[in-house]
Image 1 (cartoon, one colour):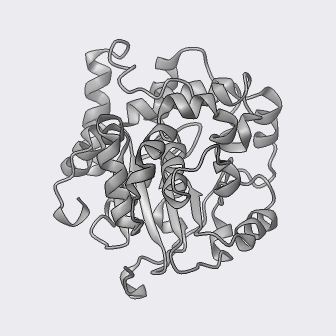
Image 2 (image 1 turned 180 degrees about the horizontal axis):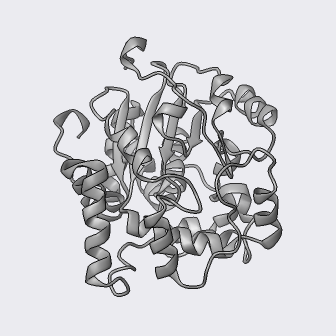
Length: 307
């Protein structure tokens, strides 16, 4: 299913921040059937990439997902290499992005999957992610000449301090959080955009995979269904982490397994004070509105066009 180009929002600005290079979308040439998987970092992008790969390749064993679906708007490797990689692909392409809507070039030829996750769970995962970066990787990221915003530096040991800085400075030291969520939420009624949620994938992965397959118009062969489910499980992905996570895990101390940390929600519940919980929830409603804030916290989506 496609929609009229005029119904899609137009690109309004560029986004340069640490790892992100939105200008690559100005040169990306879409093909009919392309799939774009987008989320704020640590919201489930890698998991959904694994699911889509399994759907396209019918439950195949040991797929190298980062090679099949690299992060298009990451500054590393060079832009030309990223574009050439996707240009050379002959299979149905699925592209990873961490950008908000107004910094991308959208196309009626593509289908867009957006994954949401409670910001507190995102933050807890981001903290581990940041602390596991190799020192030379952080140095390389922070030395990019065109970088805007604060340097990543070394993450503080205290996750609550990391949370407070991230909340007070809207995504610090990464990129803005609320505008990212809201930009995709506002497209939820478009027929080539579908919202998914980390909590729903945890709660009922088979149902969510079927919903994703229906949206992507990929029939599921009953004979390979159990293989698909097995290969999308956390245990399988952690056991095959080098073929599941970005850059094969080479950028992390401890390798790819360090990226596949816990895959759980709610670690903040026994750490944040009631005041800190209220602070986050009140800000979510202020920035997103009640419906979007509720979806981000729970995964509950009432819009019938996006079920």
